[in-house]
Amino acid sequence: MSNEDQSYEGRVIEVLGPVVFVSPTKVGTGQEEPYACSLVGRRFRAGKPVAGDLVRFTIHSETVQGRDYQGVITEILPRSSLVQRLDPHSLRARSLVANLDTLVVVASVGAPALKTGLIDRYLVCAHHWKLEPLICFSKWELAEELDLIYMRIYEALGYCCIPCSAHRGDGLDKLRKTIQGRSSAFLGHSGVGKSSLLNRFFPEVNLAVGELSIQSQRGRHTTSSARLLNFDEGGFVIDTPGVREFGIADIKSAELANYFPEFTDFSADCKFQPCTHRHEPRCAVLEALQRDDLARFRYDSYLKIYDELAGYEASRY
Ligand code: GDP
Ligand code: ZN
Image 1 (cartoon, rainbow, N blue to C red):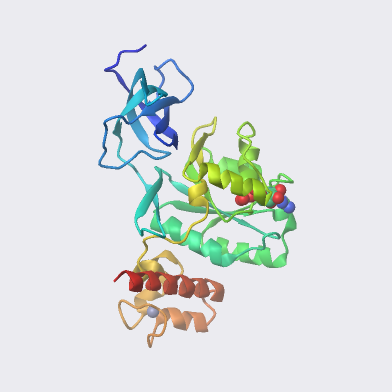
Image 2: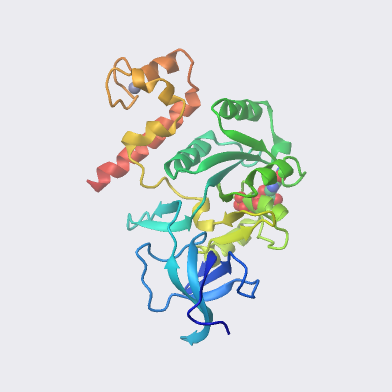
């Protein structure tokens, strides 16, 4: 065994109960597979490590409560980003994944049909977490005229849009080239094709696809487990059941408009500052909407999310 005092840098691949799997980020440990590490006796200011975390760990074998470990985590390195979700019961934030730079919003066309309201919610999350959003329109072989129109609107708003089909193969090269080398997670409702896409990139992982019964089983077994999948070319995707579907987290209603980039073209001209762009007189956003300079469906998403956030705020105070 290596010298116990020597510490290594690694990335957390998965956290399964008390076991944290860490993959060395630099050569020199002599082992390719992730190390099963413990946190024995350690408390970190950043809380427990999550998938994507960069950590320092020492290598040594020990058995704790019947489990065999190969190392101990000694430090969580500063995080460049942290995705958290609000627990709907306790209203406390739970950390899910760290160090992402990109959020892949997956929306399907056809079945289930495109839901722009969901895309807009996820885009809001991406902006809130300061991650670069990318919209993947999956099952594109089922696309109709209207889907294309929506995609063009998101493109015009400046979002990178990638139509693709896990079944037919369209767009997969582009999606892969766009996300390899980056640190991303897929976000989208159940059934939109996330596992099918990830299976095309990581066939050896073989994520469960499809049938609802299989999905609920998987949900039960892995609710809290996010797993990091490394690209050979560098970068990773975190497959995160916990992140895949959730309500909007700790965003303040007053800051929501900042997450609709096209509103900010107008909002400086609103008479009232701050303005919620809902009923205020001489609101430049409402005026732009009247002139059709803003897409109505985006504004509708804003109102819906605004009401939800305002509802949370009212229930909290
Ligand atoms: P997830 O819940 O987002 O992970 O979605 P899954 O990958 O489990 O896929 C849900 C369903 O959509 C399955 O029945 C898949 O076979 C189907 N599906 C996935 N990709 C495509 C596609 O490109 N085209 C079509 N038509 N169906 C797809
Ligand atoms: Zn306004």
